[in-house]
Image (cartoon, rainbow, N blue to C red; front, side, top):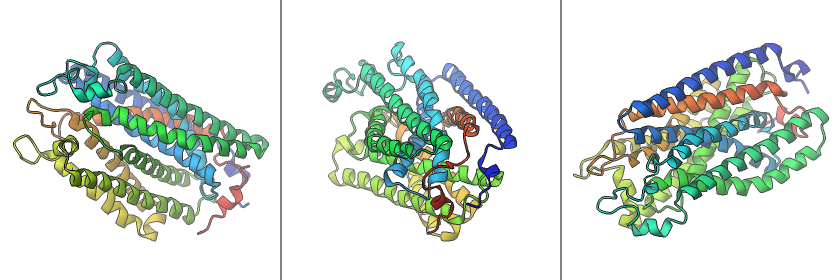
Amino acid sequence: MSTSTATLAANPGATAASGAGASRALMIGVAGLVLTAVGFFISHDSHAVALSYLVGISFCTAIAIGMLLLVLIHHIFDASWSVVLRRQFEHGFAAFPWLGLLFLPLLIGSWMGTHDLVWPWMNLNYDMHGTTVGEDILYQKKSGFLNLGMLTGATVAFFLSWVWLGARLRKASFTQDQDGDIKWTSMNRVTAALGIPMTAISLSFAAIYWIKSLEYHWFSTMYGVWFFANCIRGALCCGVLIMVWLYRRGDFKGILNPNHFHSIGQLMLAFTVFWAYVTFSQYFLIWNANVPEETFWYNLRELNHDGSTNQWWYVGLVILFGHFFIPFFALLSYRFKITHHIITKIACWILAVILIDLCYNILPALKDEHGDSLPFLSMNLVWVLSSVVGVGGVCLWAYLRSLPTTKIIPIRDPRIVECLTHHE
């Protein structure tokens, strides 16, 4: 193994830099959260700020879930090329407890009597254009699932499952660095066998509860898979940014080679196609069936009540080309996948469009007096950005705080040599 022990061990200078970076990330995160909180109290529409905050926390939670899934998949397939990247995702798991804590304001606000703070179905007197939620037959049929107690219990269960899985994976991986015992690898395989279905089910229900239920009349069997695709794509893009950052910092020099970037680029390409397949299938099935109970969701994102095209139609086109065509053709290139500054730009682009995709799914729940979705280019984007900065800053702080606590790569993993000599 050509990598020096000094490279693998915690570098005092790098450790200090990580500590300083963590402090800055926390300050930026707190500033973003404070700005969002101020917006909630000064804005004339607190519902809009709350939904914007839901966008921010859903975005960061999706990336963390994607990291968890990729590590679970790594263990179940006994992959070798991703061993060094796996360690960085394990540090990313440190964000789960904080994400759970940051989700609490949405639940607490609902319990304190602001029942329509985020999810209108919590207010049985909410006007549904001629009828109230409580009188709505569709809500009555779904009320056993859509109620505050179920939402709270399910959300707590989601985060507890993610925290528990992340803690098990971290403990086994970090302890193996010290004793080199193969039992920790076996333990993580067992955890992966249990964790993959657990995470798949929990992320699907989280997407349905948090996002899809904003328009509870709507039906879609593809929604959990759509959220899964964004989770994985977001995690892969963050993995690229981490790899390039650590390489430029010097930690990954002599560890990463072009084939590592090519492999993660291939996965980014594969899940770009997967996202397009899922999204197109959902749209085509609803368009082909032409059932009003389903088509209204897309109509809100295309037309106003008078038949004019609204801003969300153009956002949909941005998602179509930005989420599929542009990254698809870019990631076909071998050179683009292994060139650091190019793959970094592609990763940032995809992350930006994932955020827009979440806005497309969440913010049209805000409507004017005619029942039209509020414009995309509105004050809401300020609160979306402040929420992303706030929650993202806290997640970055958690990652940077965890980073110096163990080796930069899992030095005693059974497949570490295969990883360091990875080739196509």
